[in-house]
Length: 162
Image (cartoon, rainbow, N blue to C red):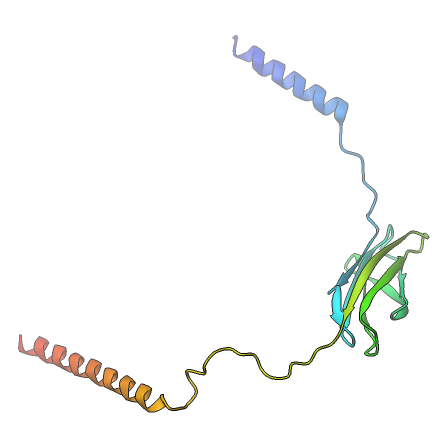
């Protein structure tokens, strides 16, 4: 009987906790603007993903870099794709989201200089490329293959004899 007293007390305290604290209040939707990727060379595309209080209505995104465009509802968010002008100078550009209810958010887009490599990457000595070592490698490979074949034949013949 003594064991039931702590259990009942614990159940009573848990009931009071639930009764007085209740469920958590609903939180307001976040207003944000995401740019992906946030660092691009001029001429590339970026994806914009935004959220306003009401994501069922289109909003607008503006920047001195690409002007003003609409972000439209898609999968519960506001999305768009923008091509950065090829003549854009490297630097940081502010991008602003303007929601229909006059709320706003901003993000930064980093434009970098487009660099073309002068030659391919230095990835090693070209061990598989034909050159002065190719005959040695081929000969060694054939010798190892021949030795393996000979050992296989010898082992098969021993099984038959014994």
